Image: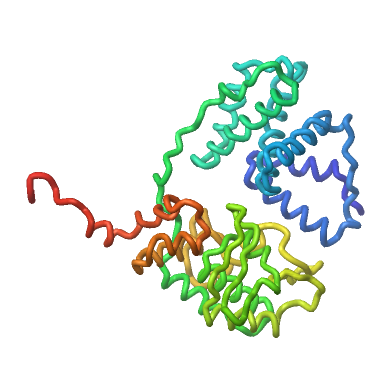
Length: 351
């Protein structure tokens, strides 16, 4: 029996928090791709969603005026949607033109109460601020209410990056077998992430022609800083990629390097599958994982390992694709032995 969109919406409303709801949306999206005939997709109308035209205009503003990348645009658009949902729920009979500063502060307080980390709090207030700027820019409100949205405390370099001991990374990779196509692919994925420090999205964007087998380099396109770069391809990683391409890669017409084995076979469309591969293989390798466990965990682990080996900080920054060396300096904080060497003597001598 086909599943109507009303059933899906009712199911999603049963989740009290955002995180499990987002996971359910991802799972439903995968189900729609695998078995689209099982779902009846309702075409949204202005009657069903009166804010649809406004959000479409907001999305166009983020693209054409702000020049945001698709992934960033999606997050900000979700922030605008959440603000509108709160406003429609708490002030159902009021127009946006009559939005007050007190109501904006109440919306901010509500979003902050649902945010668990400093990063999510900063993102929440930033998204609200951007949406309010859009309302003023589009003539939907006579005041720029973005100026009253408070900035959440967020001290740069105040935290230590989540990371693994390099022996644990190495052990997890060595624990991956080479008997099935999935094993061969996953080993190539982890080796490439762990030896180059590329991001999840960068790995998914790699194409077959981006590998220069003669020079031993991989061309990384459309990075976070909007700059393409080259990363070195170590011999072990190159051998794992060649093994995957020759023995395990699905025989489908796709230019992308890494493909999903789940029908319909093709490139990874989002970050979740790659993160699941990393988590699965690390757990199988006996690594205890915290809340953060994905491609970025291997990136942090590599950077920490390189700094611990006393590699020049600018070399590490170039490998990771950091625009500012101050971003890379975060990893110096975990090199305790090096920091001890440059520590000044305690004033007044030994206690």
